[in-house]
Every structure is written in structure tokens, then in C-alpha cells.
Length: 404
Length: 234
Ligand SMILES: Nc1ncnc2c1ncn2[C@@H]1O[C@H](COP(=O)(O)OP(=O)(O)OP(=O)(O)O)[C@@H](O)[C@H]1O
Ligand SMILES: [Mg+2]
Image (spheres, chains in turn purple, brown):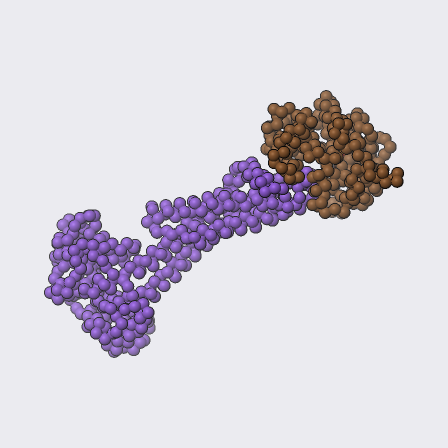
């Protein structure tokens, strides 16, 4: 049998029973599309978690009050008061290999401008905060040393705060906002960093730490100390030095530590391993639907062979060899799975795009998921097509012709 | 010398053929020690009552089935020991079947049905249509039916398509199992005339299987079979 004839026989067999071919293709399409779409969601989530963690600063080390490992009940993160402004100064002075250090005194407040108000986090910090957290200025200026020293009531706001208080595209510079009933003058606005969730720096107001200390907390404690290391390679070394210094200053042993310290690399890897698990879970769910699609193909091919037993007998009677028969049925199932695979990839892509457009979840269709899905569908076509094809080819022509 | 000549003339030669079917514990012998031969260019009828084993013989001489014992040679070649694919080659190149129940492909056009043997014989695509048209004309099917699907035809028309399909590859031997069984007497006569013409004008060897004596009478020679054994008459 010539290739062109095989092709023609396949086309006519596939089109002869359109409903059944369609349903078989549909099974594969759903399987492949869900694999691609779900992996795209998982991958997209993983990427956006990674990039939003990376966007909070460069080579960042964060120190927060609270027990590292407490014997019994662990206190919630940041609830304890153990880090002071003196600790910040000491770190800046005594630790080598750091670019900058900044205190953070953060609280959530209702912030009011005219008749609009929003609940947002207010962070009291130092000039170096801008460098540590890689903040870029969209309009106006960041806090200056004079602002800090003179305890000026000035504020740098994030773009989300601007949108909430002043409206999109409004110019907030020079306006006066009320935080905790105290008037602050807006001097600058940061550039949007994107990212999602509640921890975004776009929804934040930054003020001098001296002001925050004076009007909000009225004590020497800070909520977080942020440190930026000179290089990524120094991260763990710097982290160890800071730990030693703080333990020494607080007069604690390692087991009694009253602060927690973590670096950005650890956070990134922890978060991406969680997101990776999520991707795997989604892929497993999608894989199940792919298997169901595969069983559909096998079922269809088996019925197909059984239903066409007489036809197989006739073909053999007029001279078809074993391979002619098995190639024909194999070609049919491969055609169906390939069609299903192609449509499934297109549909999966479209779904992933739709999710990113309408569900504000970022998605990332990866080549590996396309190859995986296509490979699986090809394998299904070949494996589940081969067995019925082989069985059909082995039939004795007379038995096949007599088959009812 | 004389003997050699004779065997060269014989396209079909059955020697002591037995056919036994075994279904579970039940053993059914269908053919008993059947021996006969058919010469090139002969028009032979095999006739006998229903269930006597006519179709079974046709399947064996058509290389569709093999005998349980005995030898069968086709064109001087012993066929009983060949593999599946070798048998397929013989069917493809030497034999044209007209089955008792037509066995046309459903939902497939008349033309495609007739072309099918050419596909497996790997006849170049450009020559197929012409050969199929020739066979359909020889079988006497009106040209306006050629594009119809096979299941849109009458019994007589299907019979003609089945005959055309048997002819298309110009096989040396045509085996026709009850080709007039589904036809009225007049149409049956026309079909038999077709076989007669193919035999006379084209030199095909024709084996016609029938249980009707008047149909068998069209042949040059009649082989009688009764309960799986050859008989002198019925
Ligand atoms: N696969 C089989 N298993 C058992 N017995 C079989 C099988 N095939 C055929 N037979 C038996 O062989 C006998 C001969 O069958 P065959 O089809 O050759 O008869 P026939 O002469 O062609 O009859 P008809 O004129 O009705 O077509 C029948 O008795 C049938 O029951
Ligand atoms: Mg019969």
C-alpha cells in the first residue's frame, strides 16, 4: 500500500464517522488543553512570586523581632519588641560587607485626604531605605537626611495610595494628607513595582523614622531592620555576622535568640518550592484528564476495529497484508490524537491567555509543557492505536468476513 | 510428457482435501477427501445442497482458508504451506472473489469499492480510474450509479459492483459464490451472460458456485458436492 493511499484511507475513515471522531478528538483536546493551561497558571504564579520577592530589594537581609526557636508557644512574627534603633546603628558601624542598613517602624493606619481615605501601611524609615528596597521615584523626591534629622512631617506615597486618595493620574506632590490625625506633606511618589498580594510596596506610605517614633510608637523599638549586602555571595556570611552581633548585644545564646533573620535568597527558594508543588499538583490533575482522554481513544479504536471486522476481512480477501491493515488503523488513531493535540495546544494557550486577561492571574505557557502534552498525546495515539491495529491485522480473513 | 502437460494446464488442483472445524469439544468435518482439478480457461460450476461445503471449497481454492489436510496447488504452486502475507499476495494477483454476501464497503462510493484491489496491488493512481471504469462496464453497471454509495444500490446493482471489483485487477481466476442468489431470473441471466463473455472473450477461468441446477447448467462442467463429498450427480 502506498503512503498516499494510506493517507486517503485515513481521511475517509476519520470523516466517515464524524461524530465519533469528533468525540475522540474532544477527549484528547480537553486533556491537552488542561495540561497546558494549568501548568501555565502554576508556572505563571511561580514566576510572579519570584519576581515580586525579588522586587522588594536587592541582596536583602531582614531582621524581625520574635523567637527564632521558642521552647513552647511561639510568638507571632513581629509582635515582640526586641530590636532597637541602637541595634540598627551598631549593625551599620560594625558589620562589613553591607551596602546599607535601615530601620522600619511600620503600622497600619487609616489615611485621609479630603473626603477620601484608605487603610494602608505606614513605614517610618531612613534615607537608605530607597536603595535597600530598590525604590524608584516617579514624581517628587524621596526622604532626605534633613527630613530625618529635623523630623519633618513629609511622606512618600506608593502609586496605589495615590490612586486611592487622589484618583488615578492626579498629581499628589505638595498635597497634605492626614495619618493618625497628623498632617503630612506628600513630597514624592514611588514607581509602581507591580506584583500582587497585600505585601506590595505600591500600597505603602514612607515617612521619616524619627517622625514615626515620635508620633506613632513613642519608644525605641523597630519592627524590622533591613540590610542590603554588598553581593549575593556575601549574603550568608553577613547574615551570620549580624546574628552574632545581635546575640552579643542582647546578651543571648543562640537558643534564646529574640529575633529572626532571613535573607532574600532563602525566601525566594522557599516560595518557589511552594509554587513548584502547586504546579505539580495542577499538572497531576491535568494528567488525569489526559489519561481519561487516552482511554477514550483506546476505547474508540477497539470499537472501531470490532465494528469494522467484516471490512478488515474483505480488505484481506482482496490482498491486504497484515501491515496494510495495522498501518491503516494506526494511522487513524495517530491522526485523531495529533489533531486533538494541535487543537488542544491552541485551546490551552487561549485559556491561559484568557486567565491572564480576565482573572488577573499571571500565566506562562512553557515549551516544556507543550512538548510534554504533545508527547503524551502522540504516545497515547501510538500505544492505544497499536494494540487494536495489531489485533485487527492478525484476524483470519474468513473469520473476519463471517463476523457479525 | 503427457502428464506434465496436463498439470501445466491445471490452474486449480485439489488432492484429498479434508476440512475440520473444531469449536471447543465439538469437531465438525465439513469436507471429506475432496479431489478435483480445474483447467485454465474453464468455466466450472460447483453445485450442491445448502450446507454441503461449497463456500468452504471456494475459500480454500481462493487461498482465503487452508485445508486441515490434503494438498492444494494453484498455478502449480503448493499453497497449503504459505504464510499469511504470501497468501495475501496470491489473492491480490491471481484471484477475484465475488462473495455470497457481496461484502462491499459501506458508506463508500461504487468507484472506490472497485478501485480498492488496485490500491493494495499498488497500481499507479493515474491508471486506476480507467481500469475501474472498464470493469464496471464489463459488469454492466450504468455509469450514473458509479458515484453512488454502495449502500444506496439495489441487490442486483451491488452484485454487479462485486463482480466489477473481482474483475478489476484482471485476475486469472474468478470465484463467484452464488452470484445470482439475490437476483430475479432475468437479471440473473444477464449476470451469467457476463461471466460467459468474460470466460470466452477474456479467457478468465471461472468457478461458479450455486445450489441451483439451472444456474449450474450455464457452465462447461459441473462438480457435484453432497455432505462434503464429491458426487457424480445430485
Ligand atoms: N467456522 C465453522 N465452524 C463450524 N462449522 C462450520 C464453520 N464454517 C462452516 N461450517 C459448517 O460447514 C458446512 C458447510 O458450510 P458452507 O458455508 O461451505 O456451505 P455451503 O455449501 O456454502 O452452503 P450454502 O449453499 O447455504 O451457502 C456447514 O454445515 C457449516 O455449518
Ligand atoms: Mg455458501
